[in-house]
Length: 139
Image (cartoon, rainbow, N blue to C red; front, side, top):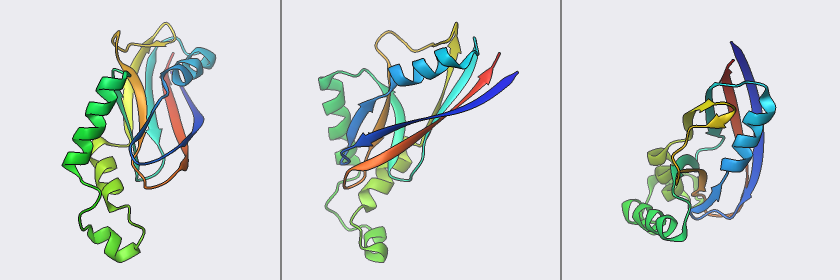
């Protein structure tokens, strides 16, 4: 059994920007020397999330609209009162979606569905440089 930790980085725009990282993650798996196992994909920070979606404009827009309805930007958040940074909505949105996802891989390729891509969603209220930690476990 092998364990390997890798990292990829992306620059984001915030405010629900969505970034397809499927190719970058598959490339790290291919380079790893591990044929089959699982990969955990984790975004560092409390205002971004990892999930999957069909990465096409309609699904992306629907997702962004649903998240905005669930945790609106312009309502009072106690976090904003304490820190004054105006990103209380970002923390709530990111907590709901979650910071990580674990995906099996076989023959050095994630076992995603045909229309399923791996995405980072940055909910913060400004651009950020995001580190995504990848941990592969397998043989």
